[in-house]
Image: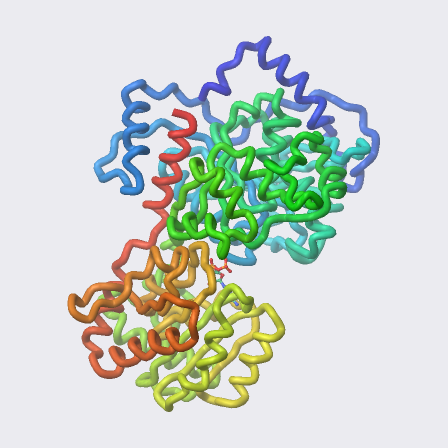
Length: 568
Ligand code: ADP
């Protein structure tokens, strides 16, 4: 790791320079978060190392060259057996991570990818906000690692940064502690509060890395909440040891960008004027866009599927950033997500009435279906086909298509189970369907992890008709549980679901292309026809689905190749 091999003098100089942006005023361990904003006398920070911090031996020239060769060979993952790869250190910075806090797919990725990378010879540290809503069982496990005051705003206001650490399965989790910003009951509130919160978080995460003296090879940022990190790194932190790190910014969903007026973002970030130009943070002359700035300043952009990487360069999917993304297309690439196959394992899933593997899936899924029907008040009959839908209830998810055709699905042989929360209009319409079709339709308007597991196991097919879907995890989980996905061909849905071919008996789901309710109905009807008239072929697809590799391993190898490409 070149960054680690400084002379003592060089390190000293770099550290002195660091004082200016990060204002590392070491506070005694006894000081409490309540002292935020007080004028504590600055002290040099203690040079501490996290358990994951290991001096790595330099990579032999031969293996480095080989790594570059394997990178250029993407997208095919390197075939086994593999030669040892050089160790890489990576800091993940993002706003949520299962099981501490999760509102969607980002939380799953922040959990599973670091663990998969740790198994591939990477040192991984995950930096997260320490939200008050993180459950007590996790709060109790965190250990205080230090704290300091950090300059943040344009008027010189400084804020407390505490670091609470938890090490779990080879991954170090460092929680950035500040009660002013993270004491709400949920991670996101509204932009008025979220913009200052994530201006603070990005800078505090970098300052914490400097404070801990943990200089990673790569800083991997996720979504707009962490998108100022590459901008801070190349400006306010340019003279610190951290600036040797390369940055990767992953777009999990381009719809959310962190856009607000320029004076507000400039005040809270204290970034120099020159980053507020039209090629970086400024958008439409009046607003500042945090994601856009990150895309400009990062070394690589990734998004969560190859198809979405193409789509976001077009006006329809580009959310007003398509031209910017086309300009930066040279550093953009798509790497499809996986799922954590230990967490999502129908053989060992304790939440299921009848756990099962691929061999006994057909019989055991019937048992799970009966348990699900009983729990949800549906008619208990394993011969009915159960269609599941597990989703945030928003426009993105294609729910207007489902609403348009739902009455046509109710044919006496089909049941529909919806699990989700979100926009009132969808919550209300699904509640209305439940009332209209008692015993046949269940709309469970809530966020319920346990019920999600039971639906994945008990349903026969899962609907994912999204308008756009960067990757989508529900279809991957469904596949793992032998529940046949019915999806629209967009983003990661297109990359992960191969349409059933009745002539060759290949494919693992049913798909439709245009965003059209009639085409969704047609795809569901094709699934129903196979289910009711050719059950052995359906059952073979269930087994095929369960045997499909949807793990993180392959994707994690692509990320590691990217890191090696950045720091050969
Ligand atoms: P997105 O990130 O756009 O919400 P994804 O498909 O990438 O969609 O990820 C959704 C994740 O959230 C999956 O793990 C899914 O099981 C879970 N999920 C979504 N809604 C609910 C809900 N109401 N209850 C439980 N889990 C849910």
